[in-house]
Image (cartoon, rainbow, N blue to C red):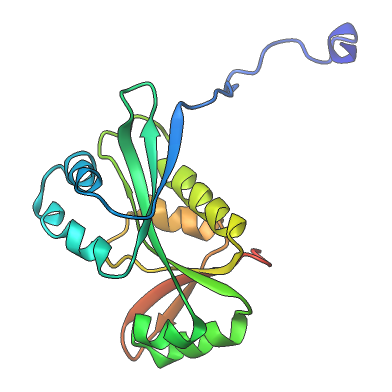
Length: 193
């Protein structure tokens, strides 16, 4: 009231954003079902060529999913992240790069998770879904005592600029192996910045 009483604040801000809760339901999928694969094919990949092998890819590495659904719209899938855990001894076999493996072994001291991809429904009903998916995935990983996260899209191999920018804003750094032309992103969640 002091601001209004002393006339320091004479009008409403023009670009004031209203904070609203979003109707999200977060689901962790440990065992992939045909129903989930069909939903991913339909809502995320629009039954395109990418959807043909999605079940095989996700089952190949004991991948878990974090799915965000729209509770206002019949729990329609808005996006998902795919991830799996690895040990420090599995880093080379995961990325086939001795440079990346050596770097990860030097900087980690704990459990490692690999995010295999983050995908958003093309409808884009809500803003900042990449940010929401990354934040929820990292929260899940921290809750389960993972201390280092690597991002490597094995599902499509292509990431949007928005996703890469969001990874950078979350503290991920680019790990680049020139000899193989391999790019992986990593973040230490004990010291994220």
